[in-house]
Amino acid sequence: MAQAREVLGGGMFLLRSLDPDDLFTRDDLSDEQRLFGRTAAEFMRQEVLPNESRLYAHDWTLTRALLKKAADLDLLRLEIPEAYGGLGLDKSSAAYVGEQIAINPSFGGSLGAHTSIGTLPIVYYGTDEQKARYLPRLASAELIGAYALTEPHSGSDALAARTTARLTPDGRHYVLNGQKAWITNGGFADLFTIFAKVDGEKFTAFIVERAMGVVSGADERKLGLDGSSTTALMLDDVPVPVENVLGTIGEGHRVAFNILNLGRVKLGARNIAGARQAIDQSITYARERRQFGKAICEFGLVKQKLAEMSVRCFAGEAMVYRALGDVDRALEGVDSADSARVLEIIESFAIECSINKVATSESLAYVVDEAVQVFGGNGYSREFPVERAYRDARITRIYEGTNEINRLIIATRLLKNSLLVGHAVTSDSAGSAQRFAAEHQLLAHGKRLALAALAAARQAYGPTVRDEQEVLAHAANIVIDVYAAESAIGRAEKLALASNGGAPIAADAARTYVSDAADRMAHAGKQIVNAIAACGPRPDDVAAAVADIAAYRGIDTVAARRRIGDAAIANGRYPWP
Image (cartoon, rainbow, N blue to C red; front, side, top):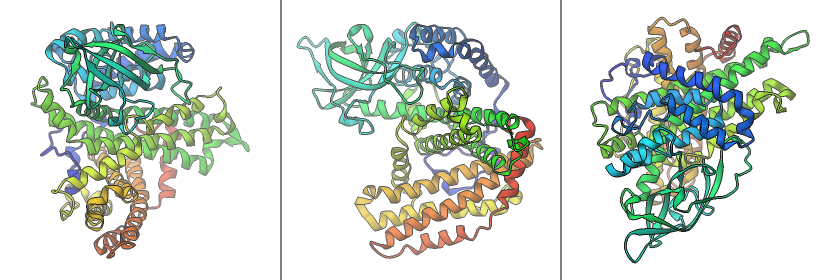
């Protein structure tokens, strides 16, 4: 992995240009990391895919058996510390394994819920005794984990939870009462991280075993992911030993939000894996399906669809692995046993994690929708694979924090950073930018627009700026496009410097993304200018940045998409392996 001159989270990418040497990409995965991925892919092909119909029939005994087989291949212990039966691998390795598991999103959801939100609360917040008691059994699949935060009346507003925990007179147990909703693995999990309010006030996390009295409701009848268990949990006077308090009483929000953020670090890789699979299925179908005497892949509008699906996937991969690489580099040299420091570092990348969550889930939504369109009427049939992909993808814009919440996270966290908002952008087109000089100049204008827009919003609205959600969302959209476009250009530059065979098509993909992103950023900037001007002075610096972006000429994206589409069709799959 290339050594960066400096690793900065918290949106600091807005103040500098990206050097391709600092960019970690999917292409940079080591042989060891790829070996774990191949193990996971082989397990999915041999064990899971042949049994899909039984998973969709809610055979949870089979799901548990498959999780045990995954554990025997070390796939459940990747992020558990070695001292507790794990491998202690980095985030990039875990994400790459998650990619392979995601080829069946239902089982991927079951495994992901267990290894991530079902296990990591104990990894990062558990006492030594709690870790020793539970982590080895989670690693081996003796216990299956789940995470219980949401309630019927509290979703995004998690702190509005009504579940209570009251200490018994003898001081030995907390008695939990309440109900949880939408719990992945809820029908068969053995161990739950459950959030409740001590004395109805202090929001706290607890490690709760099913045998303590947790009762599951019936499996939800869902739009997608119907091969995974999602249930309510009923807690009726459930006694939990005081030693099973996870973290500090009254600090459960730290557990809840940091664990969700940890999930977002890797979630993008799963989203893009789903997009890539839908692209491959669409290309195969378009090559085989004939209309008007020729394969439909020869028609320009079909070719355009395959190309745009590939463009969004290319940018998504670039931004996901950029963030993973930055997190891993930031964690180098940090004692993995120092959970507080590890969490502090990962939390510093909350903006980048939210950016990736929003961008990749919306790219996945676009790709699976277009996949159905490529399949035509057959895409609407359950006899063909993209119908299920379409349904499975919809939840990704809701779980791990809705995309609306994540857009607000991006904007409000940037507003808190005095080093950013109002700062003059000094990034320029240094490094290897000669090949992409116009694109780097556009990125500099985009960064200036994002920071100027946030500064103008703060000045115009003052302490009520958080209530201007529409304006903040427009600003977040600019930030998302800047990060995605810069990541795509950086990946294309890196492939070009390596004389990679896919470099010319990568350049087409990156430039196409930038051309479209410029239009989106100019549009968002105009909305911000007009909204602020309606209640006060016109923000001329924001308007000037919009004008600079609007002056970007872009490229001939029609021809570029034809080249990308031709490459995908010739390869018979997504253009970059």
